[in-house]
Length: 361
Ligand SMILES: NC(=O)c1ccc[n+]([C@@H]2O[C@H](COP(=O)([O-])OP(=O)(O)OC[C@H]3O[C@@H](n4cnc5c(N)ncnc54)[C@H](O)[C@@H]3O)[C@@H](O)[C@H]2O)c1
Image (cartoon, rainbow, N blue to C red; front, side, top):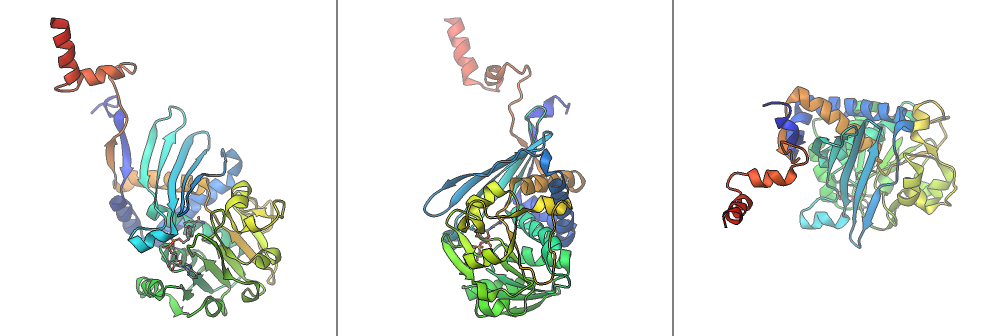
């Protein structure tokens, strides 16, 4: 096949392929390498076009488009968030995404991003915690034991060596699922009967609950001095997890302030409440954790550059793993302007037959 003939084809990574890539790579190596791509892109933050994601809200959830570009590549993710979905056998969050070549606008990759979102969210959380968690942290409370939970646990083990987990979910079945899935993977796990019990002795608290309301998963009295909070579940207007008093006490770190002020925990604060941008900490322009007493909060909502990094990583990996198929996605006429001619030349074209009848009469 010549290069000209293959212009119609775009590599597509299905869920099946993604699972093959993850398992062949090993989840921990995947998380580590993905985290390096995410960090690399945070380090060149100023090179990216940035905009708060475009969100379409409904009573039950949200559908979002998350675009960004570094001038060379363009990426976007389609993602939903519907907390009630699990009651109907569907997931709260599903996603897919595209990476494209800015020089000609042609897509370079289409990929499933449901698994990839869980991995990139966990990798970003762990990356932030490298700069913000107290030194020597070895115990994490994990409140909300749904789809994201195991990925968070593995990323924190890979990055910070966290081996002790204290798990809580309002649905004990979710905690049992998490215990079962992580058994044998080197964790010391405790199932707790309340969030209060889960945070006892934890140096890091990850909240990854799903509920479309101003929820109060943590109150101020539950957060001891020196704790790092990784707040993952509050990521939409009217959907938060932390009591406001925690925010007033913590040093707050965010991805992209214009988006986080709409969607994150800080939607509960004045629009000019001081926050620090994670990229500035990563590049050494701002301090991360300064002392052992400080309460740090990563107010995670998920930003487009993290998905861009993830797509970039997958594109690099598919060449080596071969786990993709090529989709006939782009119309590729022999002569670029003869798009209509493609229809005429299609084998058995009814248009061609009609034309021929017309010309004959
Ligand atoms: N920040 C990001 O980048 C990012 C990325 C992905 C998902 N998320 C968010 O993270 C959250 C978790 O996502 P998921 O895919 O794991 O959802 P999920 O529905 O699979 O799991 C959520 C879990 O939270 C539990 N829960 C709900 N209310 C609770 C409460 N009050 N106390 C304890 N547990 C409670 C539910 O029982 C469920 O097991 C969602 O809100 C999602 O929108 C954020």
